[in-house]
Image (cartoon, rainbow, N blue to C red; front, side, top):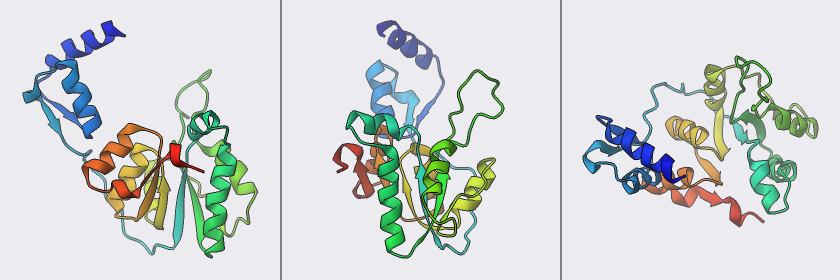
Amino acid sequence: MKINKILAKLLLNMSFLIIVRESYSYNFVKKLGVDNKKIILLPTPIIFRIKRRKRKYVGIFIDKNLEYFLKKQKKNSMDFYSKIIKYFLKKHEKIILLPQVIGINRVPLPLKDVSDYSIIKKLAAEFDPSQVIVPPIKDIKDLLENISKCKFCIVSRFHSLLFVLKARIPFICISYTKKTEYLLKDIKLKRFCISLSKYE
């Protein structure tokens, strides 16, 4: 581990400029001993536009990685997401289930599929398909198109959070990483972040 930090410091100090996306990474790079003049803290620039559409869905980003963190608390991700879906259905909302990770279709086997569709399909099977919708999403364009239809989102990962921020969609972030929490803290929206450790 120590050799990795030494190599990182050496390589980063050879860089002309280092742009980091949130204060957690900024502080990490500084602690490595990288020249402060080279480091710029800049929230991730999002170079695409998200069109404004009629927003009628609650978007729930499903995250396969959540299973690992919930297991530590002896909880189940299917139950976790089911409770969220049922809450919004009681409010007579239509729900759209969105993947945090689309997939690795272009990567040959034996790499495991990392997309979130396995859990999305299981979840959707529990509910009325006219109320809980699973849109076909092949690429980032499809994902952004569906995000644009949402009036509110539940997110957990860094990039899905960036997407809803860019689209100016109200959200709640269920966080299990420091990156998302620090980004929201940096832009003074930490009150919309729920740490997974507080989940009951």
